[in-house]
Length: 401
Image (cartoon, rainbow, N blue to C red; front, side, top):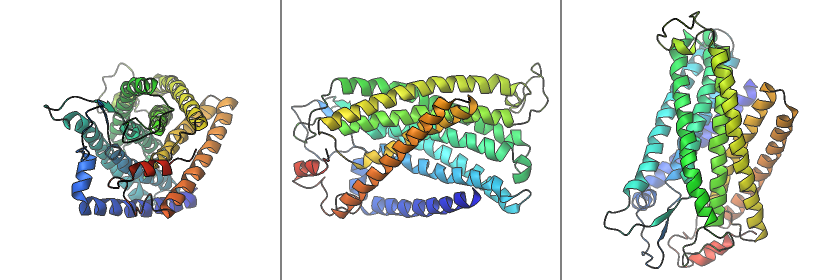
């Protein structure tokens, strides 16, 4: 486990540095166009015949940057306990992981505020109001917040409880309680943001035919965007469920401070009493089951919509499809945790099925990415479709069914 985690950690670190540099260089080199796209300053001519406005994807995907940062923290949290007891390297890695988690948490919150504030403030007051069409990336911030909570639970479980004496993060309550409180707040924010966004997306899908073809002349929404958005909602709900499960498990492994329930809590002692495992872990599992049920229903609805749209031969591949891997993985992880905590064979089989779906989705996305990169349509774009007069041909090139 240590060798595998270390290898993947360095691979993830190298990829994070490379793509972060590419992103920053492109942002600096094309700062005017990037600013117009990120902050939704459209250069297209206004459509007087349609009262809808399809917002850009670029701004919402900024939440993917701190999300990837959190994957590095996750690898560090897994590696640190495996480095040996009383090891200076283990202490260094654990402290770096703890600090990096707080940096990522603050980064995610600031990014979420920017993503939510820009659409609210981007429309001029004298402009005729339009019905905004939410892109899939709108659901990325709650998924990123839920992922922050999950990594926080991993920090508590791996670094601050079982290995508190090993890694030097002691006394554990001084470092544990702030992480627990922030993780629970992040889960609440992710959950209620998802509950607010879900009816908006569902109403838009009910009023938008799936058989239409996306075109700049009709300004109709892309059915693939709606499907990706549904899968992203699965990620916010299932990741919240997995975070609650892991938080409940982590709280049950933290040694109490000996306080009785009648003792006034000080310095976060309310989370570290001898009765904490019973009072917290069981409600966490119960609420995680509720979230898992909603995530499963959303996943099945997205899967049915995907199959139906594919039968209509109206499914288009875009880079947004890469984002469905994390939601399905979160659902599988939650299923795997339920199989352990509840001793259920059903959840074990479900986790295996979801793992197969993840592998298939990864291979399909990889194949289309390589194909369109070879054609000069993604990654290294030879003919930018945003400035090309052949926009309609670009749309048809993306069709694969």
